[in-house]
Length: 425
Image 1 (cartoon, rainbow, N blue to C red):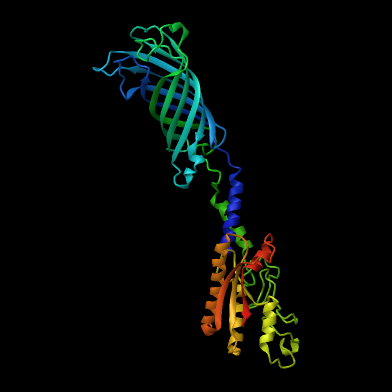
Image 2: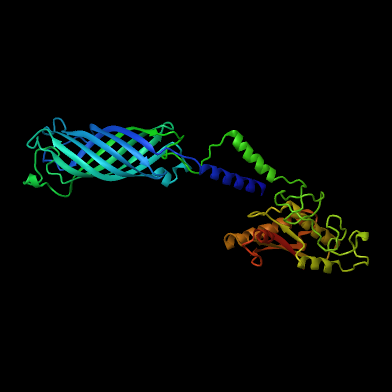
């Protein structure tokens, strides 16, 4: 329970600090590599699958860790396959505005890697295709461009990343073929409308991250907290102070409404000493904790009580004899284990009595899971009593699932529902 509370408080503190962090938003990009014109090409003209001759330059701005925009400029040339195609040499350039999505953050790559990333980009712009050979060697083919691509990243440092990129570009209103030998339609003055030119590029290069913050948006993770050792130690020590249990009753001081209970005192979930029979003598000094009596007789009745079973039944029916559990746990809380010992002592004094142990859970979680949890809680108490020397034939246990009699919106009420009770048979 303490470990659960400690981890929850630490997570909250770190998350609050993390929200105050900043990250760099600007980057410069430079890549170079291959291109491939797909169509239109004049019959018989071929271009290499990997034609070395393309360069990209870009500047990118990220609005947040997941989305941004970039302006980029690309240029290069298309050439023929030597010995297999007529000669051609066509220069081109393009200028595009694109949206960028950081798939690494969108898909939580940080769950398995902090050095590999992935960007998707797409947008539109303008371009120029300029054949330098063949029939239309002096024709400036002005086009609009649509571009879509994917960019894997490898983080080299907080300021530099190695990137690769594969992009497909569609040219609209292209008038002549990429080789410059043929007009797509006879009247070249009118242009050819539609996205009729298709080509792609494959490049490798570097991203340079700009800014004074430690990380760029590409690699920033909002849940991260880079605290100093001193800050972390201070936070942990503060939480440890909260979880101290000065009186050793199993209830941390910050929840304990009676933080100075005597050693061995039986307490409830709030750390308050129990007086099960309400006679003014707390259970840990009451020789008859379920039978009211004056302090002069150590809490026992002045008259001899012959039917002890009736008193224990009354105590059980009034809800005094219970073993309690932490959330989602079948291990009895230390302060309540003494209830099982009371039942064990009673059974030893009354050999003709049998007891059913009844397990319960709160209303949080699936119903079928709570049935199994409640049975495990009852079984844990069964094992305790058998281990104390009571014959197992006198005991039975069953899980009754969720206790719907309590207010499930109240944390204190839900704690009282996480219990094992007893019924005299």
